[in-house]
Amino acid sequence: MDIAILTPELLWWIRGRFLSARLVPTSTSQNLGP
Image (cartoon, rainbow, N blue to C red; front, side, top):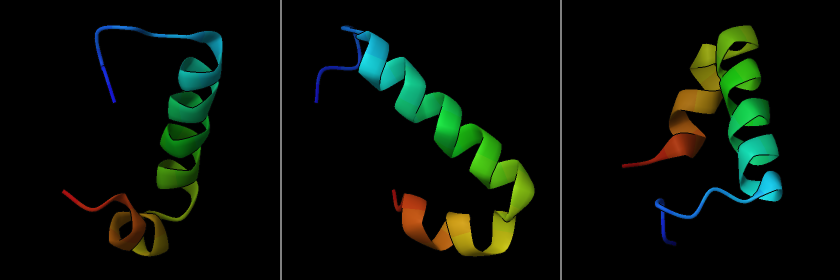
């Protein structure tokens, strides 16, 4: 995945992951990986 290219879908995905990480840091941290 090319991080340099931030598409609307990627931004939405990152936003969703960020919000999810704040709501459930325990379960999300295990799914984020390296």
